[in-house]
Length: 360
Ligand code: PLP
Image 1 (cartoon, rainbow, N blue to C red):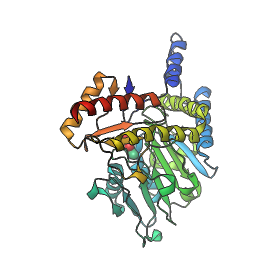
Image 2: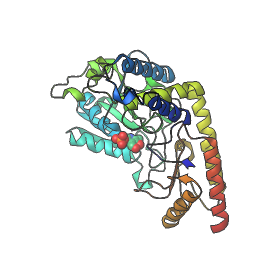
Image 3: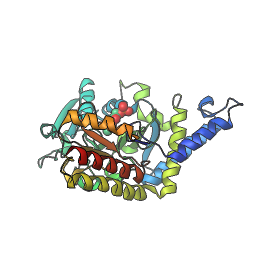
Image 4: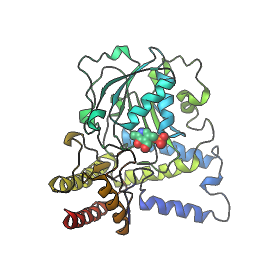
């Protein structure tokens, strides 16, 4: 069985085994990982280790804070404007998909001025919006981008990031640790854990400290302030203990696999194998422009959404789960996060070929 869910997504088998062992080991003491204090030495060590491992994997310099928070990516849509859109109260967005638009709406509801510099919505987000030539970064507190658009499948890879002289904030929820990014190109990065980092319940934020130090946060509540979470090493309030524990195991696994470079190589191989098949097929199309194609969320369609739905259902009988596209767009989406083995891609292609032979 293979799970192509876009999130929460598949985790490494080795991690699931370790989690099982953790519960079995502590079955009788009632002191498993979900039963201990977030102030315990055991948990403090886990958080400190997880932070160090993420710093190592992403080469995060010391002048960035790293925190593990609750509230998902959606809470970051609010924390970022509250902490950083404080001077001009203005945020620039590149509308590359649903989660860019949602972040913009959240900022607007907080009373910030939101400018969509460019949007690829009219062409169904099948390419990336370009930063206008005359973009004046000084007119905004920051520019918000979504590196990987989980639903629509277009990605700002490191080599096609918008080049701004101003502050840059990135939502990396669905491709953190899947491909390399230069952290110093960003002033803040966040990612919900439930795709490439672990289970749902933990969100990583990586924040440039000097930028934070410049802010006047009058009127911003304590839980919404990054500084409080940084000062308390992610233990400002009760931490999501289990999710951070599992994330730490996932980071161990990524390191053991060879780090982000190795993940990237494997992800490229997986995604290219699938795109190559789709591109030569006369039955399916992968609509995202080639230079912007996602490595983690591969979207495609037969062009007939009702038929796509039936095929995704049929796939389940072959052990291939969660292939239906997001409910807002339909079609197919195969999520190939770090833990997805090449064998899943091969099984998917075998299935798709069979359907093509029967139906084309
Ligand atoms: N940003 C991106 C790119 C996402 O894919 C998602 C969820 O899938 C979110 C933000 C929202 O995250 P959450 O559901 O954790 O609030």
